[in-house]
Amino acid sequence: MTFFNRKSDLIKELKEQLSAAEDMNLTLQNEVEKEREEKNTMEKALQEDLKEKRWTEERHNSKQTEAEPRRRTSKLDEKEKLIQEVNESLRSVKEEKHTILESIKDMIRDMSLDHTQQVSKLKQDKEEAFNATKIIQEELEQQHQLRKSQSEVWESSKKELEDKMLRMMEEMVRLKEDLLETQTNLDQQKRETETTLDRAEMVQTQLNEEREKSKGLQEQKETLRAAFVKLEQEKMNMHTDMVLKQARLVSTLKRV
Image (tube, rainbow, N blue to C red; front, side, top):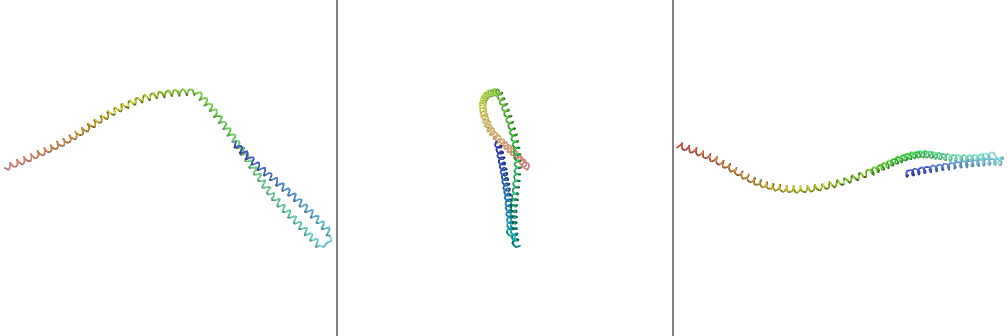
């Protein structure tokens, strides 16, 4: 609704501007016509005055010398020059007014063309807006039909959904009971496992004690082995020493 109001206001504003320009054009035309009439009146009055003065001077000064007619001719020339200057001034004003009128006509033509283009653009925008509104209405109708279909589907499947939810709740209760039973079994298994772990810890302790004892026996065994090796070495040393002594004794006996 705002879009069409804005376009309507723009058209109204353009029409007002065009009307104002046309009024200005009419006013200037009236002024030019008035000045033309004033110019014609002034020229006519000057010509009548000039004609009357010529006639008067000719009538009253017909007996004067030749110098006097020359002066009268000079005055008449001055008046004609004045009339010519007035005509030039009026012509200049007329040309200026004509230039202004042409400028206003160009402006009005441009405004009219711009107004036509804007009106065409507004029509196009209006048509596009109408088409968009039509499309939106069709989409809304489709959405309405879709919601209606969805509502019908929902109503038709509501009972089935409620039954399904009820079955799910029953299944959840059953699962909860199974979970509780499983938790009880797990607690029992946990206690049994803890008992087994305690026993395993006791066995490990005993094994550690036996390992410590075995380690002590191993050390004693190593000590005995070392002592045995030492005894064997001493035994060999004693045997070697005895053999040497016997050899020296035999050698001594031979010398004797």
